[in-house]
Length: 241
Length: 103
View 1 (cartoon, one colour):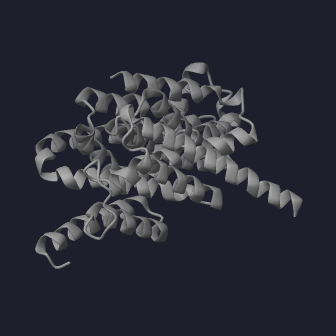
View 2 (cartoon, chains in turn blue, yellow):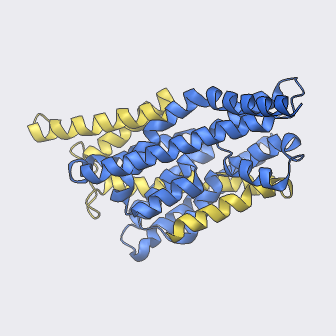
View 3 (cartoon, one colour):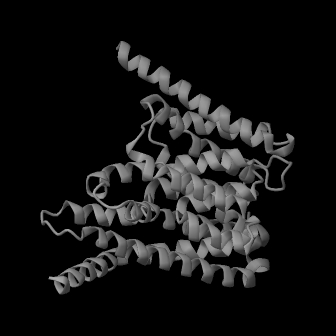
């Protein structure tokens, strides 16, 4: 029986890793780019590795990097990271039925590595009808693969980046603009979102001269308020009509 | 780096607590505006005021042109990597065009 157990755990583990392969490959360019751009944004090598090791969240890492580069105040970086990673809360909620039976050590480890990719893959596995008690190993396999890959790529990027800093300076700082635009677009799902973006952008330009990046914070607040206001107005209309 | 620590703390604290509290619907929606607002506040000045001070709302501003093209690509492709690569290519190409004096 013990033999069977170990074999099952290992099978689940490697299956998890195997099924995550396409996603891992997709993450490679991002990991390397992150390592490369981090120096230009003002992150130390230690800070960059720290982010990949401890935060392990691609989009949040890019955004935080950009915010640091723009000289943003701490509370705003924390808040934005919180919101951007918020969906991970939903992932944990979705997997709760399977995870709650596990000991707290397991829960902590799995929760740490619950990225979009691992969630997508794991939710498929948990959803299968079989009764295998080792499905969490599947998730672990997926997670370890992504994690190792992500950090290796960050290292590669860091090594390459230090060599390329002078060459890519202008190109690289536009890269951040391009990346952020790409990340904003999925949020533009309704009119209030467009309005928020419009207000935020305009305010940011108008308030640009303020010290300590106050302009940034105020523009963000303005954008959020605009979005909420438009949102509330829109739902009032639908309720009344 | 302190930032790594703080970010780690929020994320780590957040995930295991998921079962125990939920935000109201209103707060969730409001929070949803934070990322686009903050990201926009950063990139719009970067695109329109590339040297930090003067408003360059013209074709000779490659950041602006690049940003617009990136936005279009992003809208059409919905793929982040393509958007970034496409936008970067447009930016670099436009810089050449400007340097060559064709425009």
